[in-house]
Amino acid sequence: MSGFDNFNTDFYQSSYSVDDQAQSGYGYGNTEDPYNKPYGQYDYSQPMGYSAPGMMQPQQPYTGQIFQPTQTFTPSPSQSMYSSSFDDEPPLLEELGINFDHIWQKTLTVLHPMKAADGSIMNETDLAGPMVFCLAFGATLLLTGKIQFGYVYGISAIGCLGMYCLLNLMSMTGVSFGCVASVLGYCLLPMILLSSFGVLFSLQGMMGIIISAAIIGWCSFSASKIFISALAMDGQQLLVAYPCALLYGVFALISVF
Amino acid sequence: MILFSFKLLSGKKKSAPFWTFEYYQTFFDVETHQIKDRIVGSVLPWRGKNFIHLYIRKNPDLYGPFWICATLVFAIAISGNISNFLVHLGGPKFRYVPEFRKVTMAATAIYSYAWLVPLALWGLLLWRNNKVMSLVSYSFMEIVCVYGYSLSIYIPAVVLWIIPYEQVRWCSIVVALCLSGSVLVLTFWPAVKDDHPRVSIAIIAAIVALNVLLAVGCQAYFFSKPEPDLQVVSSSAPGEMKAIPST
Image 1 (cartoon, each protein chain N blue to C red):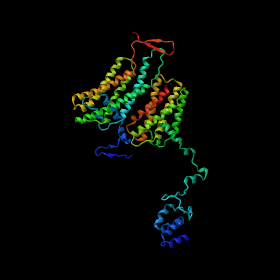
Image 2 (image 1 turned 90 degrees about the vertical axis):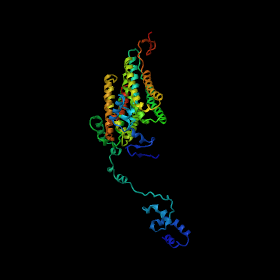
Image 3 (image 1 turned 180 degrees about the horizontal axis):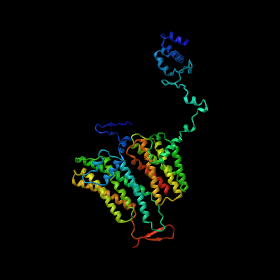
C-alpha cells in the first residue's frame, strides 16, 4: 500500500521515479483496481489475467509473456466427474468406440443386398469390423495353403486409395478415407464365403467361375448401394459398382488361383 | 495457394484453375444413363450425327475414357492369357504360366494411344486453326472423350479373339476397325474440311492409320497365332516341350 501512495505523490515530480515505481509496484498494483493506472502501464498489465489474482505474488517483476494471456487453471469437467468415483466411468467399449449393435446392423446391410440401406449408419468410421474380415479372409486362404496376407493387405490399401480418389471426384460432399475403408472392408464378407467354399471344392471349374462371378456381383452391389445412400449420389450406382467389381475381382483371383 | 473461381453468367459451371482438385470434379458429373448413351453412340456411327455435338458438347467426362481404357487393358491381358492357354491345350507336358508382363505392356500401349494421340491431334488442330478459320473447334477434353469412347468397341472384339480360328479373328478385327474408324472420321471431318484438301486428307489418314496400327499390333503381340500343324517332340528333360512345325 505504501508503494501505491508513493506512486501518487511522486507522480508529477519526475518521470524517472514514476517508471521505477511502475516496475516495482507492477504486480502489486495489478491486484488493485486496474483501471486506475495511467495509460502507459495499462497495456502491460491488462493481459496478466486478473481473473486469478490469487496466483500472483505482489512485488514480483513481470516475467510472463507480453500481450499473451496467462494460462489459468480450470479443472476439466471429465476429470472432476470421473475421478470422483469408479462407478461413474463410462463402459470400456463405449470409450473405445466399438458399438456392437452398429457392427451387426452394417453386417446385415451387406448380407441383404436387396434391402435399401440407411445412409446414416456410415457416419462413424469403424475399422474394427473390416480388420476382422480381412484377417478371416487371410485365414480361409491359409486353409487352402496360400499364405497371402501381404497381397490381401496391399490390394486393400491400394483399392481403398483408388476408391477414395474416385468418390471424392464423383460426389458433391466429400468422403473421408476411414469411411471408404470401412465400407469396402464390410463388403468383403461375401468374399470370405467364396474362399471358404474354395477350401472344400476346387474353384477352377465352370462352377467355380459362376460362383465367383455371383459373389463379385454381390460384393460390389452392396458396396455401391451403401456408398450412394451415404453420399446421396443418384443415378450413379452402376458407375460406382464397376470399380468396386474390379477390386473384388482381384480378391476373387487371389482366392481362385 | 489461392483458389480463383468465378461463376459464368450463362452456365452453371464453375471454372477453377487446372491444378486444383475442383477442376477435375467437374469431369465426373455424369450419370449411368449418360455413359450408356455415349457408349452406344460410339459403337453405332450414323452419318450426319457428330458424336461430340450430340453427346458430349455440354459435358465432357473423364470417367468413361479412363474406365474404358482400364477395362480394355484387363480384357487384353486376360484374353491373351486364355488364348495362349487354349492354343497349347492339347500339348502334353505343357505347363501354363500366366504372363503378367502383358498387363503392363497393354496398359502402356492403350493409355498412350488414348491420351498422347489426342494431345497431338489437339495441338495440330490448334495450329491449323491459327492458319485457317474453322467453324468447328474441339477442346482437349472432348477429343480425349471421343478417343476413349471409340475404344469401347474393342472390348467385345478382344473377347472374340480368344477363339483360335483365323476367320473369326479377322472378321471381328475388320468390324471393330470399321466402326471405331468411322466414328473418328465422322467426328473430325467437320473440323478439318475447311482446310487445304491435302492437309485434311493427311490428318484423316493419320487418324485411321493409328487406329489400324493399334488393333493389328495388339492382336499380333498379345495373341498367339494358332499354328496349323504342330509336331510335339518331348525331350529328355521333364516338363519341357519342343514344337517343330511340320514342313
